[in-house]
Image (spheres, rainbow, N blue to C red):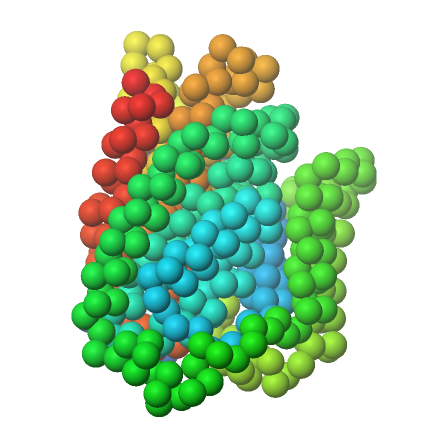
Length: 453
């Protein structure tokens, strides 16, 4: 991002609007759920303007307009268009059959989702499979842990093996990192993390399953077809549209047209514009050619994507000065962060892993990856040779620890919204963080000790 203001002038006070929207997401749903549900758009707008108005006063309206335009055109709109297309298209795919959410079935769905995450992306895999796993477990009193581990594995760690899997790795690919570098280097940390989490989940799910009042046998007596209806995939035309989304995203990263247009100082590449137009076209085709009955069976509504678009509008706006301070490195207000990862000028892999991860938990993990990619060296040849372990630490931190909060990675909040809409009492923002501290942090400690010390 080409800043037109002096980032060295930014104090930590400029991060207050971002902290405000974070605390609103964390607290308001608990203390004022009706206010939050009906006015979250106004809350988002309030925190956005609490940054934009002082920003205009300090740096001038043209600079503020330029920064907001850049963020909207190059980050927010592509982000929302991708989410919107995946949400719309997967809403037209139906996995029909009576599935009983046993530990074996749940692990199977989680495994399939974890594999798919590196092929169609964490967002695509998560939105595609969240409805089937919710339906399989709707009869269970204890089912929150299923969605939480779904976020851990399918929406985050599963996307470790290709640039298509998770946005940070895609940014690395755009910087020149080989397409197969994640698969070659992240496979062992990913397998270790997933093995631990799958094992813990199976034990936890088996315990809760044994506590349920209704067993699968009991359900079959009530509904003889339970577990017996033939498995069907409906809306198969949407699967081709989903593959079209993957192709469009990959195309925008590989093909360089050399053509661009400039809007208020922001240069938009033709391939990015074409990608977004293709994604919107796929959405239109999904809605036009798909079955409305399938969407009704999926209990498809627009609320989750509306909620995410409103909240992330504020997040993308208020994050502008925070990312700027981080990118300014040792000359900015967050210079201590640079000193932590490069003590006495020597890059420390373990610190890169933890600091990249912790910041990715609260900021968007893609720009956070890029910040530390440049802080480490920014030279692809160096980072993939003599500093390969540093790049591995940055990559693992950004991808794995995006699971730590609802806003750490794009699909997390979407999965939460869909689950709540389907009647699952998901933990609050802080409640989810407690799940992360209990189940994810021990995994990170083990990964850090084995790979980065």
